[in-house]
Image 1 (cartoon, one colour):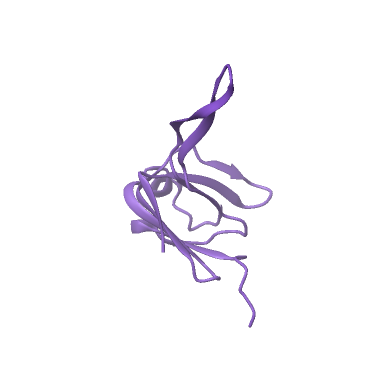
Image 2 (cartoon, helix red, strand yellow):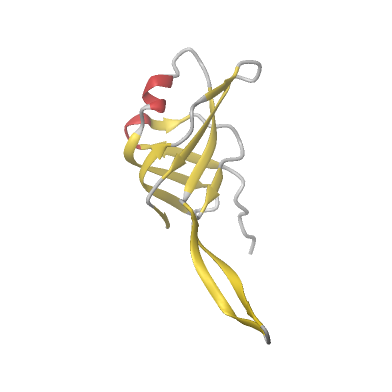
Length: 121
């Protein structure tokens, strides 16, 4: 019995529909960072702080039909990354968090979606 290793993903972004992405989207689960709390006798335990929002970062293939304005203004919708291994990750209430950057030579548009919660399925 073989196991499919995650190697491809398909990004569906609410009203933008399925985005034509290049290989290598990145999912950041966000959440809590734990740091050791030290005392005179050594480690006493740990403290927790929120370290970052969950995110999905992808490279969109840029073409004459790419609507940069719609992508830049994307807010308050869910983004789902479906992988070829059968796992899906839905970023709830997502928005585009960084200014778009187009790499003309490669026809690539980098996009970073942040959201309020990442739900693995």
